[in-house]
Length: 219
Image (cartoon, rainbow, N blue to C red; front, side, top):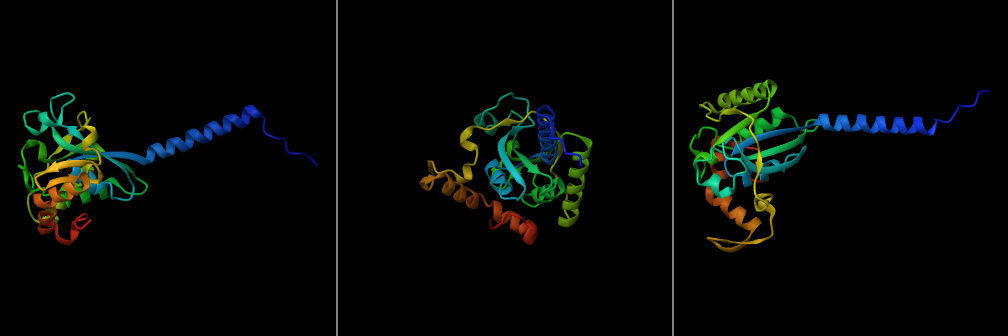
């Protein structure tokens, strides 16, 4: 009878390292990003962080000419930047196509002047792509949205540009507990966000436009 030899310590260590590298490679391959602009980035972030398979949604600025812009610079116009959200997702749980489908039905893609009560260049809709495959997916989703709505979709599909994270106080604003002064008086950020979203008419317009196909209305 031949006894099985135990793996040598060096060989065992190499096998462990190779296994960890392979696992890390698979995890990396499953993670993708999608950057979109859909009006107020607080709302886009709130919507997409509720999607199963989305790992994070980060508010920021992109598409413009100003390096390291501030919220004030972007909101007053002239920087060329959009308020945007970088969505990191696990493509084994949710696909790019699914996210693009939801994106179009969470905004008014027929409005070229902004979104809902927020007007101006920084509040326009857009999708940012890094390669021909992403562009094809965005083109397909845009065509499907136009066919379903029966109207012209004005949301542009643009080449990806540097993405600058917005100031810390903008991140996860919709669930913040800090007190802020609003026209309704002092409110916690989460309550201020709800009041703003309702007053801006976002959900009402999306529901009127997309009806039961609107994925986030009522969330």
